[in-house]
Length: 242
Image (spheres, rainbow, N blue to C red):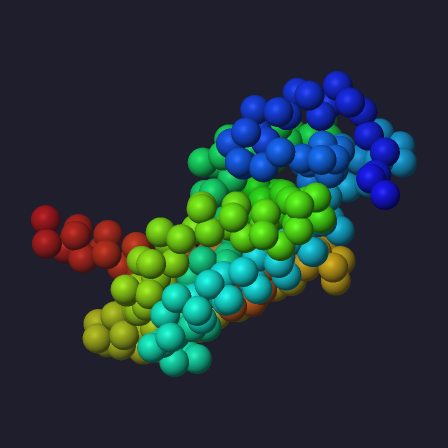
């Protein structure tokens, strides 16, 4: 049974559906995928996108794992895991959401909107997962796979060709040790309910804070923080050589 919705809202998102490449039998699913909890709290009994986000996360992970497993039979399990982690993370999903111009269609509460919520990595990534969940419910696994592979196949190919490039923690540790600064230290804090848990990681090198990162898991957050720290070290080296 299709959820209840507002037909005029569905019509306003037809251009987004076109960019997604999916014709929704139940456009209200797309509406729900775009509804942040801050908006729902201002509009009574409207259901937020959190349940669709939960489903979309699982569907996305399965599609990427299945595609990589079938397309690259030579990859060992460790490399498969690294490829998946390099594609299924908040940073990549937020980039994908920006490519699709999802921010223009987000339904945010007034406070969240005023605080820059339309460009927050966590909100964009969560919404992208919710949209994948909505496409899966509406059109099944084939429709969800078509969306994911069309948008992420290139990133998967890059990750397979350069698996080490996605492991920012290893790169940071190698560079820090090479510079005589010892092993990086990470501090991670979690926030939010269990079904929508977020993590903020901070990485220190020789006692100096070099980067922070946000993610849906501790590993994702640490990888983002390490990537920022790698950039900081590169900037330092550039300044020293100037």
